[in-house]
Image (tube, rainbow over all chains, first blue to last red; front, side, top):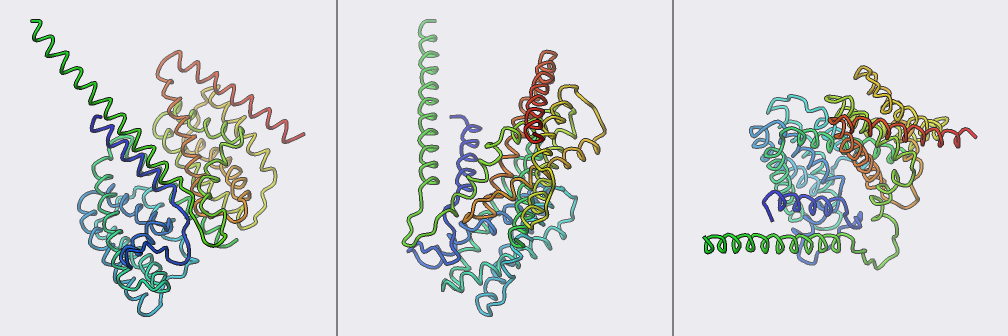
Length: 199
Length: 218
């Protein structure tokens, strides 16, 4: 198998796995391997967290390496800090606003705006705080605590790294349009989630 | 000379064998991925429906021929119009369709949804058939107008007990796939015979739309 075919196969498998998540509960799904892995699984099974993080990876990847390097630090740190605060104080962004990160991050990818590295870092930080606090509060309720937040932070770092690296490497011609189309799907999902929330 | 040819054959056989092994591995990987991802969750308590949201949403646009015709026609028309319409129209449609779905979800009524969907197939098919060239903004506005009807239909038809976000993503991704099919077929536009084939396909889409319009008005 050639390298291109291998990459295409890996992409297809990842896409199938990402688009077919199994049952996500309000309570934590236990892996039996401890709170760190429970935190990772909780993040991986919650599309409201995974999709905005992927969108941030796409946004920074489309803008270039300088943006990626800053977001790689800012997003996981903001996620971790907000998660620890939410775990300790139970202060978190309400679940009713879960649509907002999807709409904002997906919309920015769709528009493909020429943002400065500082602007993308601020956006990544704000989304990290919003999503991290929701995640931290959910993990606190389930008793996974700070170790669960650490696990989910590691998962966020890995997803942003791999996602942004893929987009940075593959963005010539039609691929750039494909990423923007994926962003528009995430934004559309956010708009519809708002509809579900208001229903 | 014979020895060289034998070497070449051996190298060729090796490459073929490697390719065969690669394909076998790829098949195993795909089967394994499908088995893992399609595994039904085992629950101690009864809680049905949520995990199937994405698939239900994905299947929804494919369940109605009127949806399929209109969405493929968007891709075909975009391919005929060329850049930037080829990517702008398929980006516009899902976003505005989501807005239509949003209206449906919050209970804003939209009169004549079925008529709008059928008319979209009839008119977009006619645009492909006649290879109609209008300004980019007019094309985007026309596509956006019809997308609201499609979104409204999707948004109001969620079966009870399913995950809203996954269902929504399912039908948005399915819509994107239908546009991509239209764009891929529209690649034939570069050949003279392909242009004719596309216009015939547009005529077929338009006729299908008229049939559904007749049914919606009757």
